[in-house]
Amino acid sequence: MWKDLGLNLEKHDVLLNALAKGYGDLFMTQKNRPAGMGYFDFVISEVHGLRIKELVDRKKAGKKIIGAFCLYVPEELVYAADATMVGLCGGADFSIPDAETVLPRNICPLVKSFFGFKVGATCPYFNSCDMVVGETTCDAKKKVYEVLADYTPTYVMEIPHKVDTEQSKALWLSEIKLFKQQMETLTGNVIEKDSLKEAIRLINEKKKAMKRVSDTRKASPTPISGLDALLVNQVSFYDDVNRFTLKTNELADELEKRNADGVGVGDPSKPRLMFSGCPMAIPNWKLHSIIESTGVPVVAEESCIGSRYFTDLVEPKGDSMDSLLEAIWDRYHNISCACFTPNDDRVTKVVDMAREYNASGVVYNVLQYCHTYNIEAIKVDKALKAAGVPMLKVETDYGSEDVEQIRTRVEAFTEMLRPV
Ligand code: BJ8
Image 1: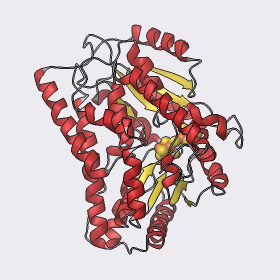
Image 2: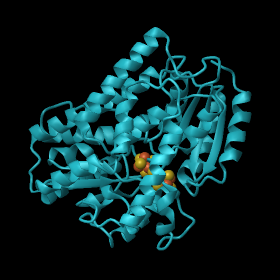
Image 3: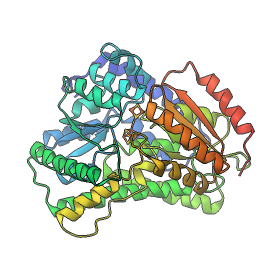
């Protein structure tokens, strides 16, 4: 199977060994984990095994696999065309040397990581894709898609950067319609009203299950570690949707029961931290593991791998194809990524979330060279300060050189926070 996918087997083995070791050290050593995390452990143990076999089987049955790098890609249209979507954002240092054989060094590690997986032929998800969908969000991504097109079929959606104008609405709606056509051409399946309604239901159910898990983290003590909750969010981009929804709802049942019984994973006398900022693509567990190694729980993620993915649902107001597409427009234009301007909506959301989750402080993650999230931190910090919630900005990459330095800063930050 690996050979058919064109993988570099030697490098792929090195990657799998490193992944298994890192996962074991970080996740399996946690105390009092919910039993429901067993499923997610299994998914990771089979992340380059059974799940890939499922995708390959779908391809053999004539179905298409679509790769994406951004929340803006409307997955409902992918599933309505009977295709499958997988997230391809890279969270590993491992693939960066391969990327740097082509790309400049001083760009965001997330972009270098995913590009390196393709160039180095080490990601079976990437190599399973019939088409990857990029988007005009940040400069690093949109320019790298031009280069990526030399390696794999690449389709780019144009995202308006001013979200609430008539022009931006018209542009984004037309992009959604063009993407629908693109999916129909690629798959040979016409997207009918009923298949789109079913896809909307499928994805909404998945997001509702994730929101249930997230809501349980408002309790003190929190019933699940931030690391485990982050993993659930990361796995949502790869797993079979129906199975993921079922298992995430089972986990939510267990966490709700834990809350009712007063069972948690952290010390309720400690402060609680919220994470905000650049997304943590799998297997980037760096900041969560550093924070939680100091005994302080992470209780929420204001991020695309976090609340921004599951908070809003597609809610059609009518039954026509136009109403369904408008509802998709409405949900997706609400994604408050830092690439947009002005982005006051995100600033308000960060403050609201910190209150909702009873966070004593916010750790704001900036991936190196991510100008949008870095600059937006100024407004977020100001708004949090006004709300009485301190913020610590951490600018980092996927390397381990700065781990101890960040740990020291987190410790100093949490010492001055009030427990909640
Ligand atoms: S909607 S956050 S998934 S663009 S961290 S690559 S922004 S330089 S990932 Fe994102 Fe879509 Fe926005 Fe979400 Fe660029 Fe920044 Fe790197 Fe980033």
